[in-house]
Length: 284
Ligand code: HPA
Image (cartoon, rainbow, N blue to C red; front, side, top):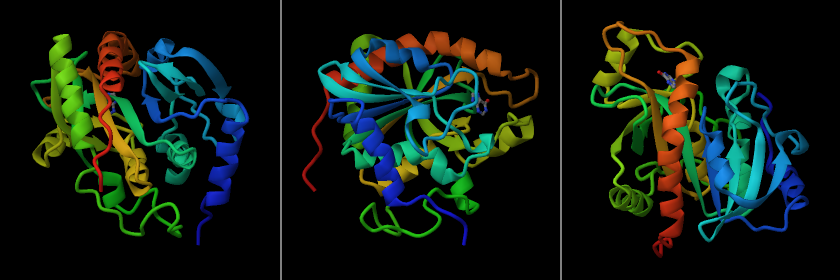
């Protein structure tokens, strides 16, 4: 059997964070490509370098800073992961999702995940934001799930339900915030592919046929682990490039980072608004 990370290792990483902050964060926030500056809104944060946390996967991608900020935002105590690791960098799915496990072990209630994504839905424009309503777990369907390997029942069930992966109450609040702020917020299905090459036009037409609205290279493994661990999830995709269904344009990482500059103020307003109006969990 392959090597897998253990609960003891997740706890070691969580202890390294506890040793560096007196805050008890309630809500996690993961910032995707080009979206790291959203962290500037956090008040008087304790800043922890990813390198100081055992087993934390280093991010090697431009636009991902590799640190944590723990502090206050809109009256909530938040843990912000500025920069994430991806499977295409060579990490296992378990390492990619270790930060979510650590958030679970730290006692967080929810995580807000953000990413940069390419449009598949032709109505989406670069700079737009999509509220993720559901996802297609393409990599997991092919056998590459972060839950592959021994299951520790103290973390979650062997066969977790995924019928309501994206919390309905949190989505309702996000839509209300968008309306109050006068922001257009699309809704749609996100699909995660392995990358790192962008999609061919034939890939994109196929993805559209199977029901995806936006495509990226992250988030779905994190959502899988978060839901396994009982965390509530809210997800936003910042659309960095238009649907290239006919092959008439090319896609670059520079374009992804550039679109991030338009997207960050919108995401900041959305995240701030959601934190301000945070709905308490429904009784089980
Ligand atoms: N495809 C996959 N991932 C992405 C894209 C894309 O077009 N844009 C930003 N991340």
